[in-house]
Each structure stands twice: as structure tokens, then as C-alpha cells.
Image (tube, rainbow, N blue to C red; front, side, top):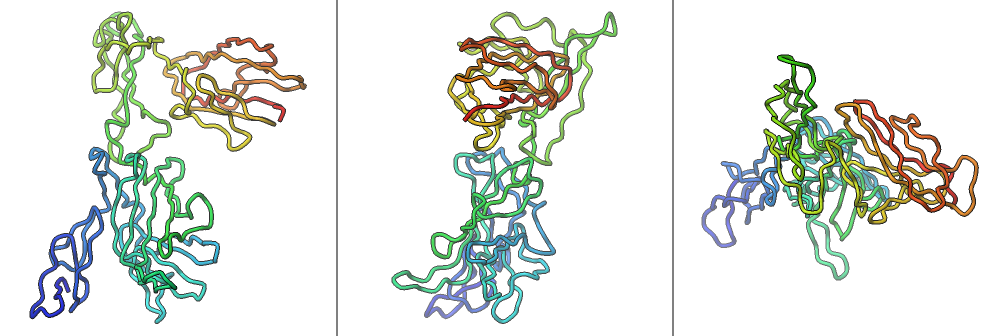
Length: 400
């Protein structure tokens, strides 16, 4: 093991870097997966279940919480009733799910249990690949060197392989693998299998890039005057796990931040210390709040209902869905008592009792029912108390 000899060679040669051989008297070595390296004895490939995307080396994934030393993750069933199981960081586990035709447990990262109740190895070599165009939103595990898939008609024999796309989902917890898109198709093309796994552990490790801070107004008088420097995650829920924790909030002197930024500038808190910077052309400061004017895509943190219960994006506005009650919502941190203000227009050919727009704060009505404005925009401003608040806009009783 760890060596190979080509046909006609009179001696064995150690496997080169990037390749390995777990068995003796082999004619070639096996390629290690991407993001792994050859072990010193050349009998296996080494990795620590961490991965840094080549295009975003500051991003780091730690998949060790998905490691299972007891059983594989699954099953995932396809349309033919075949079951799929995967593991992430090890092939060493008490495998009670995948056995070959002789009844021996298979040491592998992925297996397929056929309808005949024996299993196929569909990938016992693992590689780590970045998620194309979104290196901070997940990664792809490529599992190769599975059992040979026999030739069929005009198609040659191929080795079985599996791709597991891990997607960052802060609300999924550990999660479980599934067929892509929630369907029941796993195989395609022939003898290549695809699974999808939404998990908080598919999010990168937290770093200082995932949080920022805000500074409260100066409170108190004389020597007791102070501000509070509050740290918060840039996204709520945060799209990272483990790693760096939020720094403790700090009490600072009012003079530590000097005078407010002058007109045309804003306080940039992207670094560890704040600094006044010129507002980009076409932008203005709104005094510590956030303004949303572009609705070509949902802003970060906003969500809407599925299907007909969702709202539609229309560039510079967002429109309620067709039929029944439709909604969209987002979570905001109010460091002090504040307000939420928005323009709205409600119109319909036929008015029905109970139909109209309403803003909910933490699921409690914050506005009366806002009904027909006869095609005119109107503004409403609602007070919101300090704290983490869920703002939800609901259109009730919409007509199809």
C-alpha cells in the first residue's frame, strides 16, 4: 500500500503527491480530492474538514459539527425507492446501513442502498469545492472513486460519483441531506448522484467581517455623560457559525466620538473605529436609520410569503400578491425608541369589507386598516419601541 507499479516495471514506486493507494500491488494510484493532501504513508488523503474557497480565502468553513461517528446521514429516497446515505468528515463509523453483496459494511462517504437491499459505494474519496459565484454561501463536496457502473448499450463503464451541495441556512439547524429542490430525482447523468443539504454549519465561521457596531446618543450630564458602543451581527439571523464572538458592548465618553458628522457625510462603522466619510453621489444621510428605495431584489433580511401569499418586486415599489392575505416582513434592531415610515397606495375596482393594508410589529397591529387611497400615495409613520422588532406588512382580503 502507498506504492504502485506500471505494467512491466520491476519495482514499486511511491505514489506522488496528490495521489494515494490503500491496497498493495496496484498498477496506479488514486487521485486525492480537491482541498486534501496525500498522507505521509501514501495510503490515504488527509483533511481536517475545514475549507477555504480559492476565490475568497478569508472565508473559512468548518464542517466538523456534521461529522458522525455512529451512523451516516440519511436516508434520502429517490423515485425508484433507492436510499442514499452520506457522511462528511470520516468513513470510520459504526455503519449499520450500507453493506455490499457479501454483507460487509462499506467504509465510504456516500452509498446507495438498492431495492435489492445491498449497497453500492458511490464515493469513498472526498474533495471540497467552492460554490460557484457564491463562495460565502456554501460549498460542494465531490465524492469520487465509487463502485464501477457497468457499461450499458453504447455507454461505457464509469465510476460512481456524488456531489453534495451544502447551502448556508441559519434557520435549518444541523439539517439533513435531501434530493435537490425537494424532489425525488437523485441520479443524473447516469451513475452520478446529487444531494442538497441546508445547514447552519454550511455557513462560514464567524469573523469580525460579520459584525459591526452602532453608537448611541450621549446620555447623562457632566462626568456621567456617556455613549454605548453596541455590537451586532450585520445580518439577522447571522449567516455564520462558531468562530469569532460578538465583542462586549462598551461604555465610552461622549467626547470619544466628537461632534456629529457634518452635512454630506456619514459615520462609517465598518472598521473597529468609526470615521466620517463622504456620502456617495446620489445618497444622503437619514440620521441613524435605514432607507429602502430600490425593490428590484429583496433587500438583505426581507422575506415574503410563498406562492400567491407573496408580494411582487417592481423595481422602485413592491406590490401585494393576488388573492387572500399576502405579506412580507423583516427583523430590525431598534437601539432606541424610533419610527418606521412608508409610502403606500391601496386601490381596487371593488371594495370589500376588511380589505386593506396593515403594518404589524411583533405580530401586533401597529396601524389601522389602510384602505382605498384612490390611486394616491400616502405616508404613514408609526412609533416603534427599542428592541428587536419584526415588521410585517400584510394586505388582507385581496381579490384574485
